[in-house]
Image 1 (cartoon, rainbow, N blue to C red):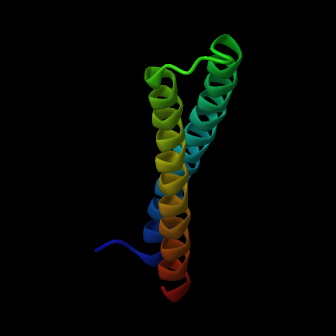
Image 2: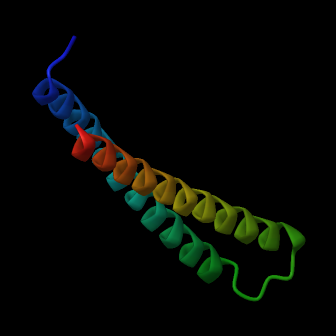
Length: 86
């Protein structure tokens, strides 16, 4: 059986991976934001349904990434709660 110190170290290592994932999520959200701006500039004034659908899809993708970030924050909090109880 692992010691408390080993468990804490393993949890911290996992949390470092979560942090890296959060950084990737943030970078993806920034890129999607840039894409939305570029698309809006390129297609300004277009009334085509596909343009609206593209904007809606990018907004949905951003929302899902935000939800993912929230889930990782909750996981980190839960992991810290666990290690504090050791």
